[in-house]
Image (tube, rainbow, N blue to C red; front, side, top):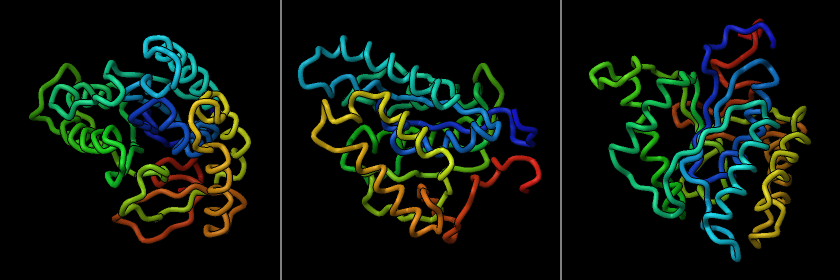
Length: 244
């Protein structure tokens, strides 16, 4: 592992369904895990209702295998919560469960969905994450673990979450791009066998487009409303030693 001043928890990605965290953030995760940063992928649901022919309980088991495999490719830890696809509740029970995970994993940076989405579970995840971060850092919220405050929150680009989303950061991921595509291919959904949406082609082309705009061969874009447009090799606070 590269010598680094990165806080112990590193990076956490919180997706609404299995596959969301991977398509919108796997390249970012790979960029940072290859530099020695730990990463945790949290799936609020398994996306088990999305198969046209398989029963939900059968597809759920497939999705578990897929998220474990893709996490291994990213060098990350995979966690999935017990909520149902399409029925993710926005409640204090869910927010406090996620608060406990944040306190447990101690991430420095969190990536999650932007609120401008046409998918209700994505919108719910956005709201849950905002409050979970607040609860996790608040000493007055007494839980089993002590409070933990993160240093950064970003919204990676997701084709379903584009209303009001803007590109504030262009992150150079040229050196991990083929590995990113391998992560996508580890999910059947991304290969075009379940959905008519061409995930793999879309995100591969998007990497070229964002690379053109960012001045890199391949790039991903993230939203950070408090920042001006920046072109980076690593997210702020997650740089390897010697780059700060």
